[in-house]
Length: 382
Ligand SMILES: C[C@H](CCC[C@@H](C)[C@H]1CC[C@H]2[C@@H]3[C@H](O)C[C@@H]4C[C@H](O)CC[C@]4(C)[C@H]3C[C@H](O)[C@]12C)C(=O)SCCNC(=O)CCNC(=O)[C@H](O)C(C)(C)COP(=O)(O)OP(=O)(O)OC[C@H]1O[C@@H](n2cnc3c(N)ncnc32)[C@H](O)[C@@H]1OP(=O)(O)O
Image (tube, rainbow, N blue to C red; front, top):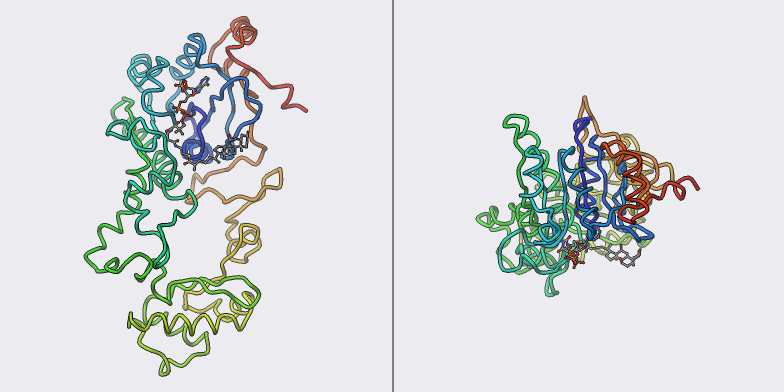
Protein backbone atom coordinates (compact mmCIF):
# COMPACT_ATOMS: atom_id res chain seq x y z
CA UNK A 1 0.00 0.00 0.00
CA UNK A 2 1.10 3.55 -0.70
CA UNK A 3 1.75 4.51 2.94
CA UNK A 4 3.25 1.21 4.11
CA UNK A 5 5.99 1.80 6.67
CA UNK A 6 4.64 5.18 7.81
CA UNK A 7 4.03 5.31 11.56
CA UNK A 8 1.39 7.70 12.84
CA UNK A 9 0.56 8.66 16.42
CA UNK A 10 -3.00 10.01 16.50
CA UNK A 11 -4.18 11.75 19.66
CA UNK A 12 -7.83 10.85 20.11
CA UNK A 13 -10.25 13.51 18.92
CA UNK A 14 -13.88 13.91 17.94
CA UNK A 15 -14.42 13.42 14.21
CA UNK A 16 -12.02 15.19 11.80
CA UNK A 17 -8.72 13.86 13.20
CA UNK A 18 -10.08 10.30 13.49
CA UNK A 19 -11.11 10.50 9.83
CA UNK A 20 -7.65 11.75 8.90
CA UNK A 21 -6.09 8.83 10.78
CA UNK A 22 -8.44 6.36 9.12
CA UNK A 23 -7.49 7.58 5.65
CA UNK A 24 -3.82 7.10 6.48
CA UNK A 25 -4.52 3.63 7.91
CA UNK A 26 -6.63 2.61 4.90
CA UNK A 27 -3.70 3.45 2.63
CA UNK A 28 -1.25 1.41 4.67
CA UNK A 29 0.07 3.60 7.49
CA UNK A 30 0.43 2.09 10.94
CA UNK A 31 -1.85 4.32 13.04
CA UNK A 32 -1.69 4.19 16.83
CA UNK A 33 -4.46 6.13 18.52
CA UNK A 34 -3.57 7.52 21.94
CA UNK A 35 -6.65 7.38 24.17
CA UNK A 36 -7.20 8.70 27.66
CA UNK A 37 -7.13 6.32 30.59
CA UNK A 38 -10.24 5.65 32.70
CA UNK A 39 -12.52 5.91 29.68
CA UNK A 40 -14.81 2.96 29.12
CA UNK A 41 -15.88 3.52 25.54
CA UNK A 42 -14.45 5.35 22.58
CA UNK A 43 -16.54 7.76 20.52
CA UNK A 44 -14.19 7.22 17.56
CA UNK A 45 -16.27 5.69 14.80
CA UNK A 46 -13.44 6.20 12.31
CA UNK A 47 -11.04 3.76 13.92
CA UNK A 48 -10.71 1.24 11.11
CA UNK A 49 -7.28 -0.37 11.03
CA UNK A 50 -5.97 1.52 14.05
CA UNK A 51 -4.42 0.30 17.28
CA UNK A 52 -5.12 1.89 20.65
CA UNK A 53 -2.82 2.82 23.51
CA UNK A 54 -4.38 4.30 26.67
CA UNK A 55 -2.09 6.90 28.19
CA UNK A 56 -2.54 9.52 30.92
CA UNK A 57 -1.03 12.70 29.53
CA UNK A 58 -1.78 14.63 32.71
CA UNK A 59 1.14 12.78 34.28
CA UNK A 60 4.74 13.74 33.28
CA UNK A 61 5.58 10.05 32.93
CA UNK A 62 2.74 9.72 30.45
CA UNK A 63 4.11 12.69 28.55
CA UNK A 64 7.51 10.98 28.48
CA UNK A 65 5.92 7.84 27.02
CA UNK A 66 4.27 9.85 24.25
CA UNK A 67 7.57 11.60 23.49
CA UNK A 68 9.21 8.23 23.10
CA UNK A 69 6.47 7.04 20.76
CA UNK A 70 6.94 10.20 18.68
CA UNK A 71 10.72 9.79 18.49
CA UNK A 72 10.17 6.54 16.60
CA UNK A 73 7.26 7.73 14.45
CA UNK A 74 6.82 9.69 11.25
CA UNK A 75 3.70 11.66 12.07
CA UNK A 76 1.91 12.96 15.14
CA UNK A 77 -1.65 14.14 14.65
CA UNK A 78 -3.18 16.35 17.34
CA UNK A 79 -6.78 17.61 17.47
CA UNK A 80 -6.76 19.87 20.51
CA UNK A 81 -7.43 23.52 21.06
CA UNK A 82 -4.44 25.79 20.42
CA UNK A 83 -1.97 25.67 23.32
CA UNK A 84 -3.08 22.32 24.82
CA UNK A 85 -0.07 20.39 23.49
CA UNK A 86 2.39 23.10 24.58
CA UNK A 87 0.85 23.08 28.09
CA UNK A 88 1.58 19.35 28.31
CA UNK A 89 5.18 19.87 27.11
CA UNK A 90 4.35 18.22 23.80
CA UNK A 91 4.49 21.25 21.50
CA UNK A 92 6.22 21.09 18.12
CA UNK A 93 9.48 22.48 19.52
CA UNK A 94 9.59 19.76 22.17
CA UNK A 95 8.90 16.92 19.75
CA UNK A 96 10.81 18.13 16.67
CA UNK A 97 13.89 18.70 18.87
CA UNK A 98 13.92 14.97 19.61
CA UNK A 99 12.85 13.85 16.13
CA UNK A 100 13.60 16.43 13.42
CA UNK A 101 12.00 14.16 10.80
CA UNK A 102 8.65 14.23 12.59
CA UNK A 103 5.62 15.62 10.76
CA UNK A 104 3.58 17.43 13.36
CA UNK A 105 -0.01 17.80 12.13
CA UNK A 106 -2.31 20.16 14.04
CA UNK A 107 -5.93 19.85 13.04
CA UNK A 108 -8.06 22.60 14.54
CA UNK A 109 -11.11 24.63 13.68
CA UNK A 110 -9.56 28.07 13.43
CA UNK A 111 -5.83 27.36 13.04
CA UNK A 112 -2.92 28.27 15.29
CA UNK A 113 -3.29 32.06 15.04
CA UNK A 114 -6.00 34.70 14.78
CA UNK A 115 -8.57 35.93 17.29
CA UNK A 116 -10.64 32.70 17.21
CA UNK A 117 -7.63 30.38 17.57
CA UNK A 118 -8.42 29.39 21.15
CA UNK A 119 -12.20 29.28 20.84
CA UNK A 120 -14.26 26.09 21.01
CA UNK A 121 -16.29 25.31 17.91
CA UNK A 122 -17.73 22.66 15.64
CA UNK A 123 -18.23 22.09 11.95
CA UNK A 124 -21.10 24.57 11.64
CA UNK A 125 -19.01 27.38 13.14
CA UNK A 126 -16.03 26.71 10.86
CA UNK A 127 -18.32 26.51 7.84
CA UNK A 128 -19.87 29.83 8.85
CA UNK A 129 -16.51 31.59 9.14
CA UNK A 130 -15.36 30.11 5.81
CA UNK A 131 -18.13 32.03 4.02
CA UNK A 132 -19.64 28.86 2.56
CA UNK A 133 -22.51 28.46 5.01
CA UNK A 134 -24.01 31.73 3.74
CA UNK A 135 -24.49 30.04 0.37
CA UNK A 136 -26.09 26.82 1.58
CA UNK A 137 -29.85 26.54 1.91
CA UNK A 138 -33.14 26.83 0.11
CA UNK A 139 -34.63 30.02 -1.23
CA UNK A 140 -36.02 32.36 1.48
CA UNK A 141 -34.79 30.01 4.21
CA UNK A 142 -31.97 30.41 6.71
CA UNK A 143 -28.51 29.00 5.95
CA UNK A 144 -28.42 25.25 6.37
CA UNK A 145 -25.36 23.15 7.26
CA UNK A 146 -25.19 19.96 5.14
CA UNK A 147 -24.45 17.48 7.97
CA UNK A 148 -20.91 18.02 9.25
CA UNK A 149 -19.35 17.05 5.96
CA UNK A 150 -17.73 20.17 4.62
CA UNK A 151 -15.57 21.49 7.47
CA UNK A 152 -15.02 18.42 9.64
CA UNK A 153 -14.34 15.95 6.88
CA UNK A 154 -13.62 17.56 3.49
CA UNK A 155 -11.90 20.70 4.75
CA UNK A 156 -10.62 19.09 7.97
CA UNK A 157 -9.73 15.40 8.04
CA UNK A 158 -9.16 14.96 4.33
CA UNK A 159 -7.24 18.21 3.88
CA UNK A 160 -5.03 17.35 6.84
CA UNK A 161 -4.31 13.91 5.39
CA UNK A 162 -3.36 15.64 2.14
CA UNK A 163 -1.00 17.94 4.07
CA UNK A 164 0.60 14.95 5.78
CA UNK A 165 1.17 13.15 2.49
CA UNK A 166 2.69 16.34 0.99
CA UNK A 167 4.98 16.69 4.00
CA UNK A 168 6.04 13.04 3.73
CA UNK A 169 6.82 13.56 0.05
CA UNK A 170 8.83 16.69 0.81
CA UNK A 171 10.67 14.91 3.63
CA UNK A 172 11.83 12.25 1.21
CA UNK A 173 13.85 15.06 -0.47
CA UNK A 174 14.84 17.26 2.49
CA UNK A 175 15.04 14.68 5.26
CA UNK A 176 13.20 17.14 7.50
CA UNK A 177 9.86 17.10 9.25
CA UNK A 178 7.59 20.14 9.55
CA UNK A 179 4.50 21.51 11.26
CA UNK A 180 1.12 21.40 9.53
CA UNK A 181 -1.38 24.05 10.62
CA UNK A 182 -4.65 22.61 9.26
CA UNK A 183 -7.54 24.97 9.94
CA UNK A 184 -10.99 23.65 9.09
CA UNK A 185 -12.14 27.17 8.20
CA UNK A 186 -9.39 27.42 5.60
CA UNK A 187 -9.71 23.81 4.47
CA UNK A 188 -13.45 24.23 3.90
CA UNK A 189 -12.92 27.53 2.08
CA UNK A 190 -10.26 25.95 -0.10
CA UNK A 191 -12.55 23.05 -0.99
CA UNK A 192 -15.04 25.77 -1.96
CA UNK A 193 -12.59 27.66 -4.21
CA UNK A 194 -15.03 27.15 -7.08
CA UNK A 195 -17.53 29.46 -5.35
CA UNK A 196 -15.09 32.33 -5.25
CA UNK A 197 -13.50 31.77 -8.59
CA UNK A 198 -16.72 31.15 -10.51
CA UNK A 199 -18.45 34.31 -9.35
CA UNK A 200 -17.31 36.03 -12.54
CA UNK A 201 -19.48 33.57 -14.49
CA UNK A 202 -22.57 34.93 -12.75
CA UNK A 203 -23.30 31.54 -11.21
CA UNK A 204 -24.04 33.00 -7.78
CA UNK A 205 -25.58 36.41 -8.61
CA UNK A 206 -29.00 35.60 -7.20
CA UNK A 207 -29.98 35.10 -3.55
CA UNK A 208 -29.26 31.81 -1.79
CA UNK A 209 -31.29 28.90 -3.22
CA UNK A 210 -32.15 30.75 -6.45
CA UNK A 211 -29.06 29.97 -8.50
CA UNK A 212 -28.44 27.18 -10.96
CA UNK A 213 -26.48 24.89 -8.67
CA UNK A 214 -28.02 25.64 -5.28
CA UNK A 215 -31.48 24.18 -6.01
CA UNK A 216 -32.71 27.31 -7.79
CA UNK A 217 -32.88 25.61 -11.18
CA UNK A 218 -35.57 22.93 -11.74
CA UNK A 219 -33.11 20.86 -13.77
CA UNK A 220 -30.72 20.65 -10.81
CA UNK A 221 -32.84 19.43 -7.91
CA UNK A 222 -34.44 16.37 -6.32
CA UNK A 223 -38.00 15.17 -6.95
CA UNK A 224 -40.30 12.96 -4.92
CA UNK A 225 -41.56 9.80 -6.58
CA UNK A 226 -44.90 8.00 -6.10
CA UNK A 227 -43.40 5.62 -3.49
CA UNK A 228 -42.08 8.48 -1.35
CA UNK A 229 -38.49 8.12 -2.57
CA UNK A 230 -36.53 10.67 -4.59
CA UNK A 231 -34.73 11.13 -7.89
CA UNK A 232 -31.77 13.48 -8.37
CA UNK A 233 -31.74 15.58 -11.51
CA UNK A 234 -28.58 17.27 -12.78
CA UNK A 235 -29.42 17.94 -16.44
CA UNK A 236 -27.49 21.16 -17.00
CA UNK A 237 -26.21 21.02 -20.57
CA UNK A 238 -28.91 21.45 -23.30
CA UNK A 239 -28.26 18.02 -24.86
CA UNK A 240 -28.70 16.32 -21.47
CA UNK A 241 -31.68 18.50 -20.61
CA UNK A 242 -33.37 17.31 -23.81
CA UNK A 243 -33.02 13.74 -22.63
CA UNK A 244 -34.58 14.66 -19.29
CA UNK A 245 -37.58 16.19 -21.06
CA UNK A 246 -37.88 13.11 -23.29
CA UNK A 247 -37.67 10.70 -20.33
CA UNK A 248 -40.33 12.64 -18.48
CA UNK A 249 -42.58 12.27 -21.51
CA UNK A 250 -42.82 16.05 -21.97
CA UNK A 251 -42.74 18.06 -25.18
CA UNK A 252 -40.16 20.83 -25.29
CA UNK A 253 -42.54 22.94 -27.38
CA UNK A 254 -44.98 23.10 -24.45
CA UNK A 255 -42.32 24.23 -21.97
CA UNK A 256 -40.56 27.54 -21.30
CA UNK A 257 -36.89 27.80 -22.29
CA UNK A 258 -34.52 25.92 -19.99
CA UNK A 259 -32.55 29.02 -19.01
CA UNK A 260 -35.52 31.35 -18.57
CA UNK A 261 -35.00 32.00 -14.86
CA UNK A 262 -38.38 33.71 -14.39
CA UNK A 263 -40.06 30.50 -15.62
CA UNK A 264 -38.15 28.20 -13.29
CA UNK A 265 -40.95 28.05 -10.66
CA UNK A 266 -43.46 26.93 -13.30
CA UNK A 267 -41.05 24.39 -14.79
CA UNK A 268 -40.35 23.02 -11.31
CA UNK A 269 -44.08 22.52 -10.75
CA UNK A 270 -44.34 20.54 -13.99
CA UNK A 271 -41.36 18.33 -13.11
CA UNK A 272 -42.71 17.82 -9.59
CA UNK A 273 -46.08 16.70 -10.92
CA UNK A 274 -44.60 14.30 -13.47
CA UNK A 275 -42.13 12.71 -11.06
CA UNK A 276 -44.92 11.77 -8.66
CA UNK A 277 -46.48 9.59 -11.39
CA UNK A 278 -43.97 6.71 -11.08
CA UNK A 279 -41.98 4.93 -8.40
CA UNK A 280 -38.25 5.44 -8.00
CA UNK A 281 -37.57 2.03 -9.54
CA UNK A 282 -39.75 2.89 -12.54
CA UNK A 283 -37.97 6.20 -13.07
CA UNK A 284 -34.61 4.43 -12.77
CA UNK A 285 -35.64 2.09 -15.55
CA UNK A 286 -36.60 5.10 -17.68
CA UNK A 287 -33.38 6.99 -17.14
CA UNK A 288 -30.70 4.33 -16.62
CA UNK A 289 -28.70 4.02 -19.80
CA UNK A 290 -29.48 7.59 -20.92
CA UNK A 291 -27.49 10.81 -20.56
CA UNK A 292 -30.36 12.64 -18.85
CA UNK A 293 -28.28 12.88 -15.65
CA UNK A 294 -31.09 11.44 -13.53
CA UNK A 295 -30.30 8.96 -10.76
CA UNK A 296 -32.11 7.49 -7.77
CA UNK A 297 -31.39 9.06 -4.37
CA UNK A 298 -30.16 5.97 -2.53
CA UNK A 299 -30.22 5.50 1.22
CA UNK A 300 -27.11 4.33 3.08
CA UNK A 301 -28.68 0.86 3.22
CA UNK A 302 -29.36 0.74 -0.51
CA UNK A 303 -25.94 1.66 -1.88
CA UNK A 304 -24.37 -1.79 -1.52
CA UNK A 305 -26.91 -3.48 -3.77
CA UNK A 306 -27.06 -0.83 -6.49
CA UNK A 307 -25.73 -2.50 -9.67
CA UNK A 308 -23.20 0.22 -10.43
CA UNK A 309 -21.74 0.24 -6.93
CA UNK A 310 -21.85 -3.54 -6.81
CA UNK A 311 -19.93 -3.84 -10.08
CA UNK A 312 -17.14 -1.62 -8.74
CA UNK A 313 -17.19 -2.89 -5.17
CA UNK A 314 -17.61 0.71 -4.01
CA UNK A 315 -18.96 -0.35 -0.60
CA UNK A 316 -18.00 -3.31 1.54
CA UNK A 317 -19.16 -5.19 4.63
CA UNK A 318 -16.66 -5.68 7.42
CA UNK A 319 -16.45 -8.66 9.77
CA UNK A 320 -19.13 -7.08 11.97
CA UNK A 321 -21.51 -6.78 9.03
CA UNK A 322 -21.12 -3.00 8.96
CA UNK A 323 -21.31 -1.42 5.51
CA UNK A 324 -18.92 1.39 4.65
CA UNK A 325 -17.41 3.03 1.59
CA UNK A 326 -14.28 1.55 0.07
CA UNK A 327 -11.36 3.98 0.41
CA UNK A 328 -11.08 6.34 -2.54
CA UNK A 329 -9.41 6.92 -4.92
CA UNK A 330 -8.43 3.53 -6.32
CA UNK A 331 -4.70 3.27 -7.02
CA UNK A 332 -3.83 0.73 -9.73
CA UNK A 333 -0.65 -0.78 -8.23
CA UNK A 334 -0.94 0.04 -4.54
CA UNK A 335 -4.62 0.39 -3.69
CA UNK A 336 -5.88 0.85 -0.14
CA UNK A 337 -6.74 -2.34 1.70
CA UNK A 338 -9.16 -1.37 4.44
CA UNK A 339 -9.04 -3.51 7.55
CA UNK A 340 -12.13 -5.74 7.88
CA UNK A 341 -11.74 -6.48 11.61
CA UNK A 342 -13.57 -4.72 14.41
CA UNK A 343 -12.34 -1.39 15.77
CA UNK A 344 -9.88 -1.50 18.68
CA UNK A 345 -10.97 -1.26 22.29
CA UNK A 346 -9.43 1.55 24.27
CA UNK A 347 -5.96 0.47 25.36
CA UNK A 348 -6.18 -2.86 23.56
CA UNK A 349 -2.66 -2.57 22.17
CA UNK A 350 -0.91 -0.72 24.99
CA UNK A 351 1.43 -3.58 25.94
CA UNK A 352 2.31 -4.67 22.43
CA UNK A 353 2.92 -1.14 21.18
CA UNK A 354 5.10 -0.16 24.14
CA UNK A 355 7.10 -3.34 23.69
CA UNK A 356 7.54 -2.64 20.01
CA UNK A 357 8.68 0.92 20.78
CA UNK A 358 11.47 -0.44 22.99
CA UNK A 359 9.99 -0.36 26.51
CA UNK A 360 11.28 -3.12 28.82
CA UNK A 361 8.73 -5.49 30.35
CA UNK A 362 9.47 -4.13 33.85
CA UNK A 363 8.93 -0.54 32.68
CA UNK A 364 5.60 -1.49 31.14
CA UNK A 365 4.47 -3.16 34.37
CA UNK A 366 5.49 -0.07 36.36
CA UNK A 367 3.56 2.24 34.05
CA UNK A 368 0.54 -0.06 34.28
CA UNK A 369 0.55 -0.32 38.04
CA UNK A 370 1.00 3.46 38.39
CA UNK A 371 -2.06 3.97 36.16
CA UNK A 372 -0.05 5.97 33.63
CA UNK A 373 -1.01 3.52 30.93
CA UNK A 374 -3.90 1.06 30.76
CA UNK A 375 -4.20 -2.17 28.87
CA UNK A 376 -7.48 -3.82 27.98
CA UNK A 377 -6.25 -6.97 26.28
CA UNK A 378 -8.47 -9.22 28.41
CA UNK A 379 -11.59 -7.39 27.32
CA UNK A 380 -10.43 -7.68 23.74
CA UNK A 381 -10.37 -11.47 24.02
CA UNK A 382 -13.92 -11.75 25.38
C1 LIG B 1 -19.90 18.24 14.85
C2 LIG B 1 -18.63 17.49 15.17
C3 LIG B 1 -18.66 16.81 16.48
C4 LIG B 1 -19.48 15.57 16.43
C5 LIG B 1 -19.02 14.64 17.53
C6 LIG B 1 -20.17 13.81 18.07
C7 LIG B 1 -20.35 12.64 17.16
C8 LIG B 1 -19.83 13.45 19.52
C9 LIG B 1 -19.61 14.74 20.40
C10 LIG B 1 -20.05 14.36 21.80
C11 LIG B 1 -20.31 12.85 21.72
C12 LIG B 1 -21.23 12.29 22.79
C13 LIG B 1 -20.68 12.55 24.21
O1 LIG B 1 -19.30 12.19 24.31
C14 LIG B 1 -21.50 11.83 25.28
C15 LIG B 1 -21.73 10.35 24.99
C16 LIG B 1 -20.46 9.53 25.25
C17 LIG B 1 -20.71 8.06 25.02
O2 LIG B 1 -19.49 7.36 25.25
C18 LIG B 1 -21.19 7.85 23.56
C19 LIG B 1 -22.46 8.62 23.31
C20 LIG B 1 -22.29 10.13 23.58
C21 LIG B 1 -23.72 10.72 23.51
C22 LIG B 1 -21.38 10.76 22.52
C23 LIG B 1 -21.91 10.54 21.09
C24 LIG B 1 -21.03 11.21 20.00
O3 LIG B 1 -19.78 10.64 19.93
C25 LIG B 1 -20.89 12.69 20.30
C26 LIG B 1 -22.28 13.33 20.15
C27 LIG B 1 -17.43 18.41 15.11
O4 LIG B 1 -17.50 19.48 14.63
S1 LIG B 1 -15.94 17.78 15.66
C28 LIG B 1 -14.79 19.14 15.47
C29 LIG B 1 -14.52 19.73 16.77
N1 LIG B 1 -13.46 20.70 16.70
C30 LIG B 1 -12.18 20.37 16.67
O5 LIG B 1 -11.80 19.22 16.67
C31 LIG B 1 -11.20 21.54 16.58
C32 LIG B 1 -10.00 21.39 17.47
N2 LIG B 1 -10.39 21.07 18.82
C33 LIG B 1 -10.98 21.92 19.67
O6 LIG B 1 -11.25 23.08 19.36
C34 LIG B 1 -11.32 21.35 21.02
O7 LIG B 1 -10.60 20.17 21.22
C35 LIG B 1 -12.81 21.10 21.20
C36 LIG B 1 -13.35 20.13 20.15
C37 LIG B 1 -13.61 22.39 21.16
C38 LIG B 1 -13.03 20.41 22.57
O8 LIG B 1 -12.57 21.28 23.58
P1 LIG B 1 -12.20 20.75 25.00
O9 LIG B 1 -12.22 21.91 25.92
O10 LIG B 1 -13.05 19.59 25.37
O11 LIG B 1 -10.73 20.12 24.81
P2 LIG B 1 -9.34 20.84 24.50
O12 LIG B 1 -9.35 22.29 24.89
O13 LIG B 1 -8.94 20.55 23.11
O14 LIG B 1 -8.36 20.09 25.49
C39 LIG B 1 -8.23 18.71 25.55
C40 LIG B 1 -8.00 18.34 26.99
O15 LIG B 1 -7.87 16.95 27.09
C41 LIG B 1 -6.65 16.63 27.75
N3 LIG B 1 -6.18 15.37 27.21
C42 LIG B 1 -6.08 15.00 25.92
N4 LIG B 1 -5.63 13.75 25.82
C43 LIG B 1 -5.41 13.31 27.06
C44 LIG B 1 -4.93 12.09 27.61
N5 LIG B 1 -4.57 11.06 26.86
N6 LIG B 1 -4.82 11.99 28.97
C45 LIG B 1 -5.19 13.02 29.77
N7 LIG B 1 -5.68 14.21 29.31
C46 LIG B 1 -5.77 14.33 27.97
C47 LIG B 1 -5.75 17.78 27.42
O16 LIG B 1 -4.68 17.84 28.33
C48 LIG B 1 -6.71 18.94 27.56
O17 LIG B 1 -6.87 19.19 28.94
P3 LIG B 1 -7.12 20.68 29.50
O18 LIG B 1 -8.54 21.03 29.14
O19 LIG B 1 -6.90 20.54 30.98
O20 LIG B 1 -6.13 21.58 28.84
